[in-house]
Image 1 (tube, one colour):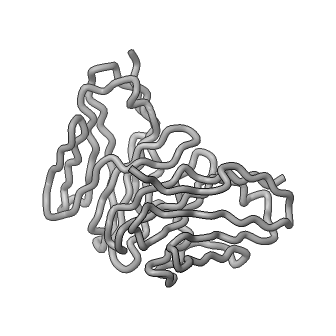
Image 2 (cartoon, rainbow over the protein chains, first blue to last red; image 1 turned 90 degrees about the vertical axis):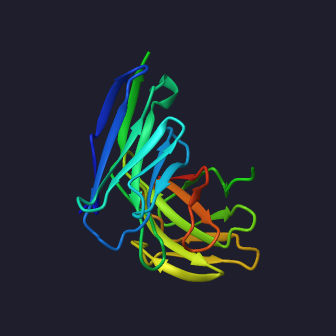
Image 3 (cartoon, helix red, strand yellow; image 1 turned 30 degrees about the vertical axis):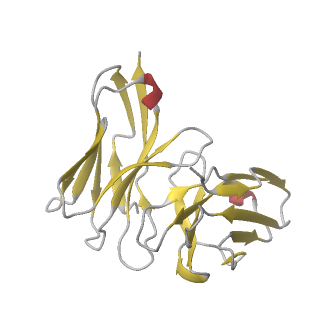
Length: 112
Length: 112
């Protein structure tokens, strides 16, 4: 059973558009929520992360929105570019050990 | 900036053989995590070490063992390899047990 549920499974966006990926969790012990970008055959690269004490965090074209009461968080990619085409994973961690629990991933394709 | 180094990058083994994967964390990072990623799947946590002590354990088979050495590098030892062990194995490191995790490029293990 996936502890972090991610949607959509795949996403096609036009160049310049906004890409939105959503994640939901149940474990209230989670207190750290990163997003990773992964290209085929490469390691996941940390994009941006948020903790529950803030509702939004922005870094460049990437924004995380966090809704603690709904136990949901999302990634917005503004002005999406073909180079953003990759698989995006949300993740969560909390409690002892800090292991990351990943969502199933979203394959993003940005059409030029 | 220095990144996580993993070796070898590719490894082909036969069933029932053994394999050793190595991970060199980012300088001054004292925590190492191992993840396994099957084709089209999200990374699954195997085991982690903080200051050379095992800090957490996930779904790691008994056939696998790992340790972290005095220079903070880590090795994942896999014995009696099975076809199902074929996957990408990632190492991630962090500075402290509660900090952001940075992933290496991975080792692609193929068991034939």
